[in-house]
Image 1 (spheres, rainbow, N blue to C red):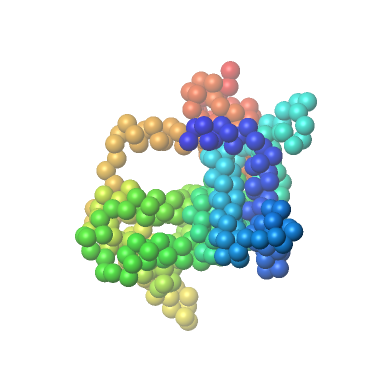
Image 2: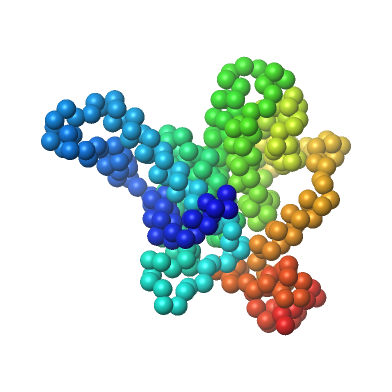
Amino acid sequence: MVERAKFARSHPRLLRAGIKLLTRNRTAKELSDLTTHLTTCECPNCRLDQTPHSKKDLDKVGFGIMMALPRLACNFCALTLNESTQHKFRQQKTGEKAENQPWPLGPDDLLPYGVQGSIEGLSTWASGEYGFEGEVIQLGTSLSTLYRPFAQELLRSQSFSVDILFRHLRRVIDQYTKGAPIDASLGRDLKFEYEVSRTLEFHSPLIDLDQAKYLEMVTGKAWIASIYEDLMSILAVSPDQTWRTQSVMIYVGLAHAQAKIDPATGKHKVVLDPKEIDRLMPVYNDHASAFETMARARRGACGNITCPDDFEGTRSRLCTKCNLLRYCGQKVIVSSTLGGFD
């Protein structure tokens, strides 16, 4: 993983080409033309119509290319963003050509087609037709973690964060159960665990940003409630799933999705059982939990909770006294009680 991240960072042209491929909002014709281009064989025999490959062979090869290129772009871009500090872009290198500058240098470099256009472009690849929805969702997590306006738009539009996300979860669950009742015979499936984990993780930065708004997105949606119910049922018979740490979030989401909205007043009632929440609370390893907290703090933006900065492109600096928290500038750090720059 480290070597892959290093390779990705050292090829900024590849990263910029990849993010453009994934985030451009194409029309149906443009997408069809792209598919045709990628599935057209350019070998001498086919170009000269001498014993060309069969259409079946071309379709198979073309589909493989269609899956491989965007998946590779998703993985490389996500790996690079995951190593970046939250809300912080890369520094431009003096004397380096524009094409060799580290990625991303700023909002326009991160999302060349804008926030809304990029979400629409990603939605095309995550529609369920191409087989790498999980990779697109993982990239979406990295983008919303790094760049707050992206997460804000996901909360506002909901087409990606609700429709695409939960329909992907439904497909993953259905493939896992294969239509059979959920029982202990299902056991563990590493691919299923991985897909559920990274799909649920997508909502973490949205919850951190605005938990009330996130819960509002799922409130009163019966079709989402059925997905949460299946996840809870799977946990009941296979409690060693790696995503069991998300069980409280699943339970709270289920309670909101099951809520009945009064059409006259728009109000609803959510029923939560504190004892059930206590039961579902994961048991943390103190050392592992502390290490994770420190790692998240180092990736965070300004450590002063009274900072007025909206974090759009903030270039934070690491505190030299604690070597843990970050601050957006000397003026803010002086007012904090947690240390300062030398």
